[in-house]
Image 1: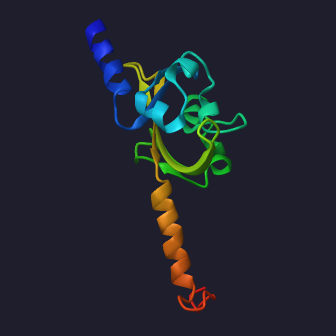
Image 2 (image 1 turned 180 degrees about the vertical axis):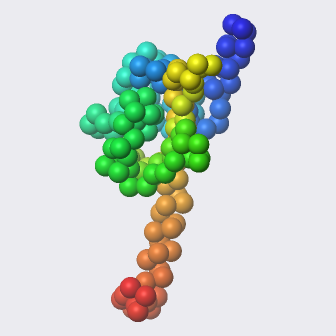
Length: 161
């Protein structure tokens, strides 16, 4: 069993997708290498703490994983411009948001997924959050939307606007 647990932790730490895991009390138990690269925050700085929010925001606020740990899904509208349940089973959520990353000093459009992990008795033991940088996609989408409503020659709004 211990060997399997070590393998699982190692697997999570080396995923190419930025990932962190909170235990049932909201403490960071895994902060993988990809998460370090995306945020500029080393695992040693957040492991065993509830300070993971500092990697994404200048002021304390809930991350999507916190919403699930604290059972505060009613607040999703205030936290994220775009959000939805991941499945019809209602066990996870997806959200998108612009974040000014304090450590790296960049504004990124992040897409996050968070899913709960339950024990055999149905009790929450952890929440896994994955993060993807979709800034290039969002910027391209915005440019296309602008091109659709403006005249190419004059730059003035067209009828579609």
